[in-house]
Length: 371
Ligand SMILES: [Zn+2]
Image (tube, rainbow, N blue to C red; front, side, top):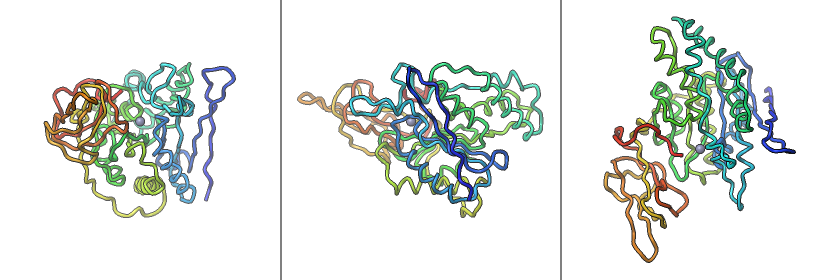
């Protein structure tokens, strides 16, 4: 079996006398079949995906890859340097440059301007034209900070992929996915293989997350040019691999097997993955999900755990102010408690849980993500 090609990219560091490298494993051949790009650890303190991709690299090394698969198991070497007081803090760039999974370059409007008039009835030709132009736009960009160089390294290797998966995790959670509505239910095979408890659908959640930078231009162009044949040509997803502590070889092996079967079914790996399972979980608009906020500072004592169904008005947790009182935090909607906080102390406004309701909630508009 051919070994993967390991590509190491030097990222110009923000400081003097520093070296930062970014590494990708490339299986198969460009242009021979469909292309997939998978990464983990963009939020550098979210570890489950790194182990999943370690298992996947082992499996791909022994497989016959018929397409091209790029695997980046530790996407964010900048975040991995952010140790403070013995804790790895990998969600935000601590120099003030924000959340590592926000503000990705969104190419929709530029593509419309540059190739809109050339888009016709031939979907295959449109896909080739749009992908070539995406890469051309990225080539013109002039990154400054190290985080911009890293974003460009990611985008240049992924923006033309048929499948692009960004592996994350939540605090304490069941498996769940974020997808664009244009990809549902066509991507239900991925959700089913991963045995996802829920799928959240949003076209523009407001934060410029990477999965929307990958998929969003296709959905935008399809709306801007309704007479042209523009399919949602990138199956882009954020996969939340349960909670931060769910890092075992057993879970990672199971998840890597699921992704392997999904890729085989999608024509990237030779072999029979077996029949596609049926998706059993919830699929809702992201506006149907409610974040439960603590009104006060105090100790969080949960009454419910991820996977529990709650009804509107039911207590999900109490915030204990020692020696004073207990303040209940109740669900605003009927639904599935998908996420709760691992840390057991809240300050006023802390998100202590996420409930996936059954219909969009009136107060959930505009920016739909957490910070
Ligand atoms: Zn994350």
